[in-house]
Image 1: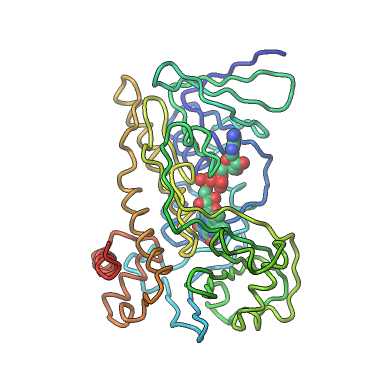
Image 2: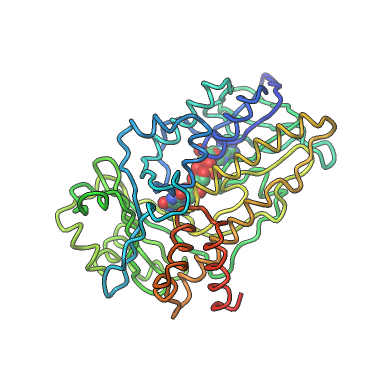
Length: 402
Ligand SMILES: Cc1cc2nc3c(=O)[nH]c(=O)nc-3n(C[C@H](O)[C@H](O)[C@H](O)COP(=O)(O)OP(=O)(O)OC[C@H]3O[C@@H](n4cnc5c(N)ncnc54)[C@H](O)[C@@H]3O)c2cc1C
């Protein structure tokens, strides 16, 4: 077996949105980056609905024009259905920040490739089909990665900084991040794409629709180019009460939701029914000497508010800036506390996710008040730190006793 060693300033594990964003920005700042991605792109991935705060990162990456021209459905809002019927839609045009008045629904195969292409354009060296196996360490310091590409080669990658952006896998995160789960948010999702679904008209055609099925289970409806994505989220302990197989689970859940059913009565499924783990968690340690975590490797929250991609690219931006700062400062690169503002955003989303799953909690009274509605819209866009968002979060915490 031959030994091959690659050296660079930074290694990024994972070419999803977090890894592509972090590596593109670090390369743009003038550093050499090696990105290891286990799969070959384009590849399928769950997580298709953006929230508008992602636009700020897309702008910084210089891909907003590409997003505009790609043919992704424009997403102007989100609407929640209870078993009794539709709630008043939340439109992003009501958001405080005018840069966040609209965003997109994306096919992840296309979106993730677009971001990774940007990283390559900025000078990142990508190693596709290359799986990171474990970190190389010198005491507490990470000095590189051992990897495999399935060929007869022992691959080692050396760099003073390693970013783990390997998603829920968390190659480094699981070893060093002290990942902590959120009790009661241990869900599974089953989902598929359908064609010929019935969409709303005008700007509502691209909205995400959320249908509550029971207190702890709900369905998503996300319009995509030519198809819609439909998925069920339910507790891992009870989801199989809907059926024995993913297909029968999804069919039964859709059948139990008349408001969704009427949109799908002429639709047919175009993909297999996939299953994904949807357990919320966050790493207690976000980095150390020579390493840091970004995206789902750092934390993950149940997708009812489509916060995942925002948190992923936001943490990637923070990671990229922290790496640049560390190199400029000289000395050993340390990253024990680079993600404080990510944690604030994560906490804020967690509080409204908890509210969603709390029996008897209703957003209606909050949304009736103008400032309350403003706060909810701001949080739903990802602009989680506005004064109205602060007041709403405090009101929710007071009600939940948190
Ligand atoms: C059911 C469900 C629904 C969701 N819906 C939404 C939604 O509507 N909107 C939203 O914003 N978010 C949603 N999300 C969350 C969203 O999918 C994630 O937050 C997002 O993909 C995180 O990006 P990432 O780059 O951190 O990780 P990923 O996108 O998972 O990318 C990680 C990459 O690392 C690679 N990798 C893994 N291990 C290794 C290894 N050992 N070596 C090399 N490469 C490796 C993988 O192949 C992958 O390409 C949803 C998640 C779930 C589970």
